[in-house]
Length: 136
Image 1: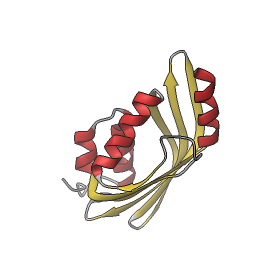
Image 2: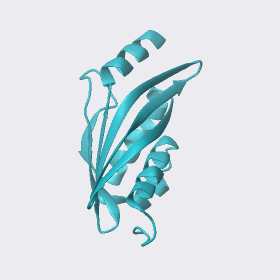
Image 3: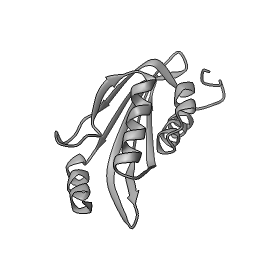
Image 4: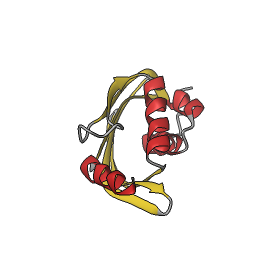
């Protein structure tokens, strides 16, 4: 599947973030390139950081967040397009009943041949690490 000619890059990014939140690996494989480059840096003790490649790695990351942390959600407030690249600024949240972790985040993606070829997520992983420590 490639981007439809009438589908904007921010619509594709929205669908990618929704697929991550829902751990929808079938949709991720439709939106992401086979060899998508993934960068999710953070606190060194946090097990949901990732520097890897491939649709399977992206799906595994979404599963790990869901299993280890809780239900993931993204709410993007601003989108910045620059040719085949896009950045979005918004909020990253994880709900683990009865608590919710929420932090600002930035997502940077690149598009190649109609699919997301790189995905970078920045968020306050140190605060998430502290939040998770308080839940145990």
